Structure formats: structure tokens, C-alpha cells
Amino acid sequence: MNTALHPLIENAQLLAFDLDGTLIDSVPDLASAVDKMLLDLQRAEAGEASVRQWVGNGSLALVKRALTNNISGDQQIADEDETLQQAHTLFLKHYQACKGEKTVCYDGIFALLDTAKAKQIPMVLITNKPYQFVPEILQELNLEHYFDLVLGGDSLSEKKPSGLPLLHACEQLNIAAQHGVMIGDSITDINAGKNAGFKTIAVTYGYDHGKPVQECDPDLVVDSLDELV
Image 1 (cartoon, rainbow, N blue to C red):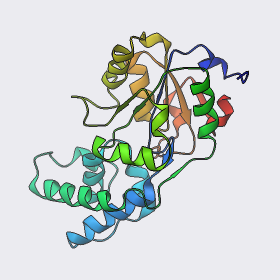
Image 2: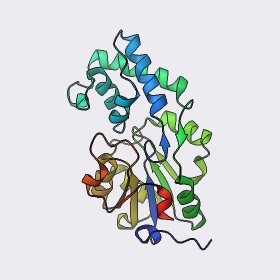
Image 3: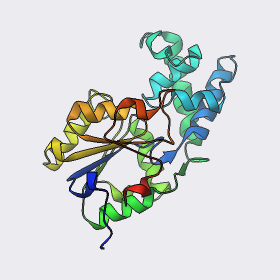
């Protein structure tokens, strides 16, 4: 394949991708699970628009934000809170049941994935989603064969924005961090990349927690991943 890649990734030795908001739009299913959880607790539904702002820091943070109806809710409830634990269990049950019903791949992702794979650039998936949901989603969307390593938010002792998952991927694949590029949709991904010493690319269409990714100072911003090919 003679297709060139963007100069920022042409010589990369590792591409690390976020999942939700970068490769797939999973909010419709996440919102369904959140709303069912809230109804179980006799609370008002949150709705898809709110959930779209809350996704990206893992399932526990999402449930905290849903319980408080606030993007800062993850800072207001202790992890040990009994209502939170009950709500989180309910959310996981509902998401397990609906996780692939309305989730779709974003336009433009396969141009980059196919080109990088043809050029034999190692790719890893680093998501804050609980790992238990990830393999089946990847399989259903024909994404599983692209990645040399897949890490969920509970795979290691820390998740993004920590750089640990990215550095773990480097260690597993024997690649120096300065040759890695993190591709994501939010400040969580960009900070994880910076914390690991990666270059960073942000997409504009994902879940930005209400903070435009341009303000997160990534090395590059694109409207579609096919701009990188």
C-alpha cells in the first residue's frame, strides 16, 4: 500500500486509540442503561444529551454523574457510598443487556485503521470502559483484529488520564513512549497521552465533557480520522 499517513503518525511506532467517542458512538446504549438504572431507583431519566457529556472516565464516574445530574458528580460521591454501589450494579446489568443495540462506528475510522495495519504499525486500544464489555463490542463491530493489546478501565491499577495504561502498552510491545501517538476525543485522552510522553491527536466529534478538545492543547485536531490518511 502506497497510501501516505499524516506526518505526525507516518513514523509512529505505536498508535493508541480511545474507544467511546473516538472509534464508536456508544452513547445511545449507555444512555439507555443509565436511564433504566435511574428508573429502578425511582429517579428521573437523564437522557442522551446529558449522558453524552458524562462519558469518558469509566462506569463509576458515569453513574456518579447520573445520580447527581452533574458533570462534577464524580467528585461529590465516595466510591464506598451504598447507593452508588447499588446504582453501579444496576447500570452494569442494564448495559450488559443493551451494549450493542445502537452502538455504531464513526465514519472515517476504517481508512486509518486499515492503512496503519497494512503498514504494520502496532495499534492498541485503551478505554476507560470496564473490560468485560469490550471484546464483544469489538467483535460485533469488526474491530477486534486491529489491536495488538486491549486495555479496559479496570485492567490496571490506574486508568486514563493516568499515563500508566499507555506506558504499560509500550512495555508490553517493547516500544519507547516517545514513538507513540494517543488518539482520543477528550481531555482525558489528551492528558493521558501527555502524561505518557506520547504525541496526541484529538477528534472533534466525540464526548468532550463540555470542554472543546482544541482547548486541551493536543498536537493535532481532526474532524475525522480519515484526515490522517
